[in-house]
Length: 313
Image (cartoon, rainbow, N blue to C red):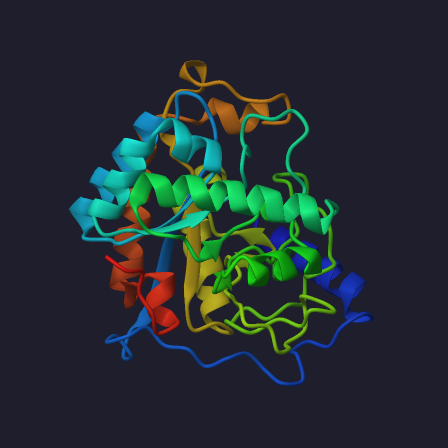
């Protein structure tokens, strides 16, 4: 299996190598978490889609974070925040960092696509979600992750104009090979380390006011879906390979992954293999992953702390 992934990464890399250099000319930013310079930052992030029935999964993840003394960055779809304002307020009360994740992402048959939507449409989605999360939590979010990691230079401009400080959407070093929803190589060679993107092309460093922190990937993503499919041993191997070129790890999961699929409502594009392994028992697998990361010297760090700011209380 490992050899197969390496071969797939080689093929994807060769397809992109003629377009961009291995590392951007200005290099990535050197950012470190506040107060934990000797450890490797682990950004534990949660993508809260607007999936009916998934709210119990978010409650379970909050309890999981309490057990491990984790503070998470939680990206919330605006409609979810509007429907479950008390739960989003509890996220903030428990000390987690809140961001946005589109407006209605998770329940639409034709999902919000930040790659192709107009500037006005994207800004409308972002503003609606921002207002919903702020109303629910009392804190205006300044962190964003695009639905499906479908992002564009237009998204960056819209985020800047809405006062956002960072993004975690660029699918650097990722190509899903039929497993997920990232099937384009436009940003494959973007930096794995935090950087300020160029407004002309997100794969290159520039002068944006926003800092990009790409979700970690070794061709396939470091997320709960791949942990469920590939298992912990292969995920450990992928993390080791990533650690050779990156000083931090950005992991993400979804609340719906910890709830039986039959108790939730999904659009048609959610795959059967994904739904089959949705269950509360996945918390045991997540326990093992987090324990491994702690043993490897990673320290849970809020994304905002890496940038030298914290959300207001």
